[in-house]
Image (cartoon, rainbow, N blue to C red; front, side, top):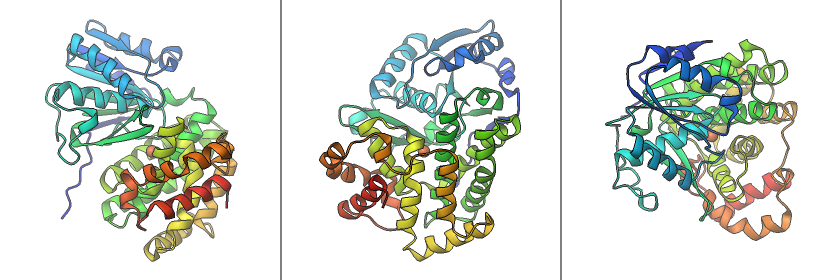
Length: 375
Ligand SMILES: [Fe+2]
């Protein structure tokens, strides 16, 4: 028996859907956002117009890998302002940070160092969360996941609980029109990785499979167009398909690609999507030893009209000008060899536990080696 959840309660899509904010109830809005792109492209200005007459606190400055410190800063601001609604605006980082702020705001007994895994709250009590993604990749607007970095331990901490699910997701592709090329590519490949990993999970059911396969085919078709031609149609398709990938993986879960990417990202502050993009073909090549994975990869090849799905991912990476190895991300060999053991151990945490092939420190180190050296 499984209990599926496709919250948020409401997903509002389409160009210009941001304007729904002017129709919402609520009096005290806290806006959590990132490093300034939403101010520069006019989105913050539009939001303040839509919220005219309400009390609004703007909390800016969430980085690309939000840290415990950033969450604590937002938590202090939240305690002082006492919002009835939080608007999380930006990439997955801003939305993840807002989720964690609210979780600790509503549950003051929780501590980052001792999160009771599996016993976290299943609902929010005081604050409504509206998530507005400005990138097309993490799908944090529909997931129960918040990933927060602990820089002291070099770890990314995934916090999974139903209380993290936003109440409303607003998918307005206008917000993505000014995205830099590298963000289009990296977030798009993150979304593809979500969908592929959800589909390859051994416990992926019919609901997850339809969502995941649909998202895979949509992203394969539209990500290259979104990158090269930057059309509004392509940006809207990517915004929708990344969300479908999120709905798939928030029920089915992820596997070893994200386990390794979290380890590398926590240690070196690497871009999450770029790391996933590089790792994906290496992990697929390894995982296809499993007969069920091999069958699913053959099905994906048939559906996407290619001879080999792993080759298709490599070719897509090439079209998107993604490096072929972790070494090409700028990690020198001496540093990599020094950190290799701890990276392997950290990679075993989180979604790697659900990889179709059970991993140990030696086997996962070999997979990371293959992605580092390009073997
Ligand atoms: Fe991801």
